[in-house]
Amino acid sequence: MNYEVTLGGMSLPSTYADRNCSLARALEVVGERWTLLVVRDAFFGVRRFGDFAAQLGIPRAVLTSRLKSLVREGVLTRDELAGGSVEYRLTDKGIELWPIVRALMNWGDAHYSPAGARRAMRHDEDGAPLDGEGRCRDCDVVVPVQEIRTEPGPGFEPPRSAPDPVSGAMNSPRRLLEPITTRE
View (spheres, rainbow, N blue to C red):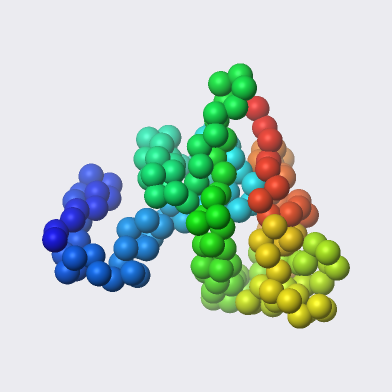
């Protein structure tokens, strides 16, 4: 079978036989830069369209496309709230992406952040740091995403100007998946 993926107006053929490669299929869902950044921000508590757009600096049309795709694939849910607002939340399938997001952040810190990790991850229960695999250095358990606290690490660079409310919340010590609420 031949499939085409559209990227920036260009169609990229996908010719792997019967899409029988799990890695290739996974990359079709989350292998695009903006998509992974949307997923990363969802882990950090971003839930509203306007907050994703402002935080990422992503064109609104691209964000709309990525959110629709992630909802269609079951990575995010789209929840309509009272008053007409909409929130996007990671599903269980989306939360399963945490080890990949964490690994890419660790790799980026190791190779592109000479001052150290930009974000430190801690076990919220006992405050101990997590190793690269997400294991608590005190109690020696792999900590579930819902129990991970993130805070600025040694490689964190404070913004040069006053941060917007979403950035301010994301850069403060907080639990992953804890919603950031702002007005759209």
